[in-house]
Image (cartoon, rainbow over all chains, first blue to last red; front, side):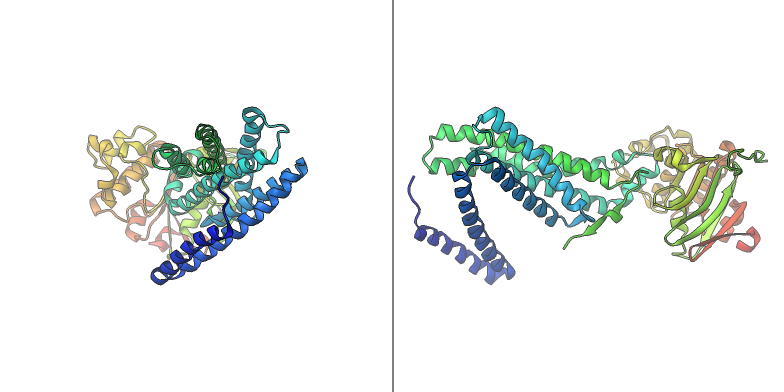
Length: 264
Length: 217
């Protein structure tokens, strides 16, 4: 692997600065947003690099679980923050976090235990990056699907209630919105799988190849990751949409939009 | 004309077709009233007085306090889907979610559709091409096809010409007579109330009170 110097990174950062400058001149606040995002990326990745270094040196189950918990809590916060209309109270945080926990953690555990077969199963070099990729993608799917569901329910209140008035169940009354929400959440991963290797070379595989891994080995890992991400995102999205649909109605199958509030 | 009132031995509540016991919700003061089989009740009140709130509460579409009973059975003891099919609310603006008219009917309605002046092939019509008046009449047929015991109609003839208004009025009256069903009909037209109603409720600032029909007209 060719070693990257700080100067190499500074040259790449100059490109981002140039982009922020031009975006700022023509699109106002966009330039500032690009700058902040660039700074956040640098700081967050440097910090996680240090954390991973320490974790790899002292690979104890407790530390790995603590790291996983922090990742889940941050992902839950992100899901909540990305919703235009979110559930009132702890539900806005709980639905996303619970569905991501059930899907990403289960799939990661399955991959480590059954597919890759690491020893010990929580070996951080595998567990943390795998969980990170799964959580990141599941978080996108869950947040898009929940945002779509809540927003559509808000906009189509009359249609949903028209069906309830005719004796339809809550499940039937919201079935079309439920389908659209799940579809929205899964489109990114379906597109990624469809375009992989033709339109784009996935990031993980590219990283491995740049780091000197044999291409065929990198491809195998990428296929595995893609499949795991698809399953994790699918389970997480289905779970989040299912719980959200239940929460949108009460025990008398009334549409309860008073349980939603507008986000910032 | 109407079935004899009988009394439940358990709670001493007369078994009306529909009864409201201290029914209330935000914007609606507690109301206790009963409706007998076959009765046609008109409702009037200024905009925002609580007419729609009352009908929605009776249809169990919004949380409310108090109790609703259909033929003596509390709404809580009946599945929500069954309650709403039996106590059917038809709002002033109808809603449609599929492409064809037929996709919105869960029971056969040929006779009802013909009585409302539609040709046989109306089932195949595309919803997007319907006028507001056609939508309103079809919404009425869609509700009646469920054979509800109580109809809650929120200005059902607001978008209709005089001919179709008469058709809808006649259909609803015939339905109530044949099925021994009751109707609560929100109407701002004194002439319509005189034609249709046997009782009249007025709502003012969330307070429901029954008034003599002559006074209402």
